[in-house]
Length: 250
Image 1 (spheres, one colour):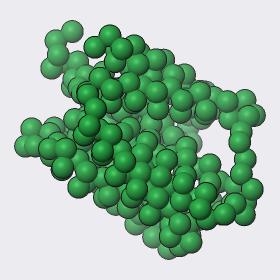
Image 2: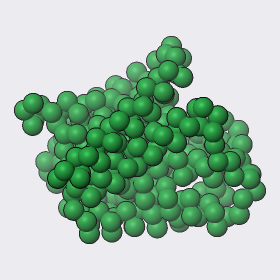
Image 3: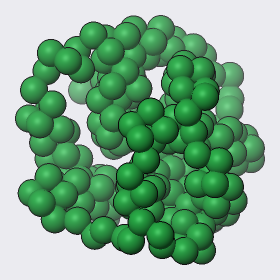
Image 4: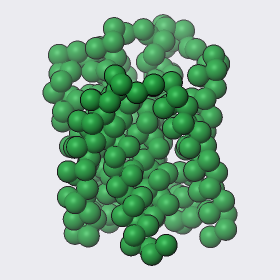
């Protein structure tokens, strides 16, 4: 396939999936970066996606601006900052193929973990687990988010056992990830990824992302969510495996 056509196809599909995730299909967004990486190097792809994610965050944070847990944010955000920093150092020091392999591994592990949870398996932490564990899970969330925009699993492993009310959980998640996305801006700037070319690509894809977000809101009540998520997670495992193979062959 023509490289430009492959890039635009992968970018549009990735942005649509990201928009659907923000519109209600939470968790599906982790598939966006593996798809994007099929058409462009993973660091550039993540940089193109970041402003789109920040734009989408505005809507979610505004919608739940009165529903968030300050203690969870106080514990996890410093860890997230450390994780983002570690992710930046990793991406700055290793080759493109290594970043691609890391993205593949994160995608594959995320998909396998979610499929396992769907079948009834889970590592459940006590609801009163100490704050230092939340800090460590924040580091994991920041690192995987910096590399793959996939920081949800570590975040959820510490937060979900606390059984927050639905709006409080959604609001806390929205605020945490909005803050973390802003933390990633200096890291991607330091990597030299906010070029005119990349920002133009972001501007072209932003309307698609916004449309997909509204589509997600409309579709979330009409689609069989269980089958949709199973398909997403299987695709993540397969795409992760492909990216690992591509990295090893590079």
